[in-house]
Image (cartoon, rainbow, N blue to C red; front, side, top):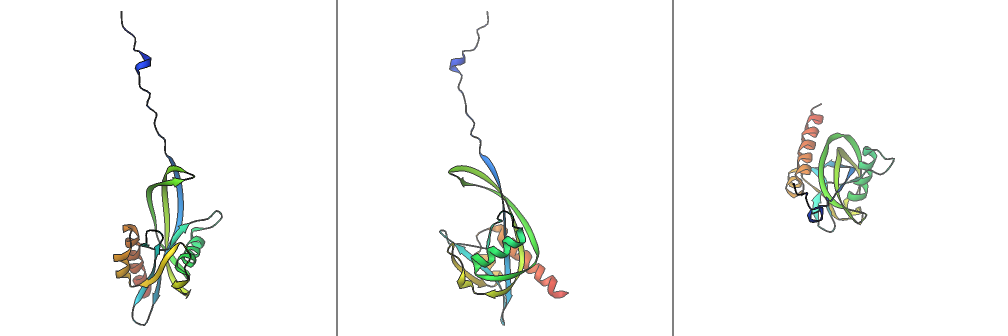
Length: 164
């Protein structure tokens, strides 16, 4: 006679399912030409003070282009004009939403932008500092590899546009 397995001894393993949330953000590499150099606007965000390009969530009913212009105005304190899309960056990260751990699948639309007006001192409260730096300096300062690459691509695009 075969012995049937004792169900009471079986361990029940509960799998934790982590929700995936898609996020769409937009921002820009905003450039200006001074008498002495080409410069790009970068920001340091609270509380970490890490340097990054201005960007943020695309609000409901907003296009990525409009969101990018709004985020640059809010975070860097400047008005800009869209030149063209540099790239759409995709990445994953874990965070918290409504008190629960979630996995974010994020897409960031980065635009090449031309400075029109404003002052980097007029940034919002989420930003601890906003400044103009040479692109090479920005690449050294930026916290994220993808944003360093975005500035490199923006420089190349600017060079091509100036050749025309």
